[in-house]
Amino acid sequence: MVRWEYPPRCLGPHVLPARSHCETLTWSPPRGDGQARVVRWTCDCDALFYELCQAGGLRFIRRTRRHHAIDESDRWQAREADAMWIALLHGLVR
Image (cartoon, rainbow, N blue to C red):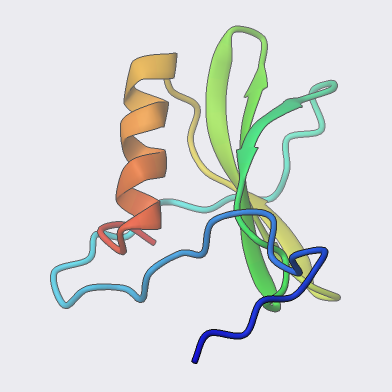
């Protein structure tokens, strides 16, 4: 039997586990080059969650490890960044 909570605890999608052929993204410390707008996000119920951000016409993925560190991916044009975001959600990149 499925048990439903209200309001729902998880409001964002969950990232699937990394697949055996998962590619590695390059992660760097935040640039601090201005405000970034969060376009999409994953559920933050785990200690690790992700945000797809946009700043200066480019998009990037922000990785947050609760109570530890924030890292950012390379910057891409919107189409490529959206493809990377989908790959992340499906466990194809980390």
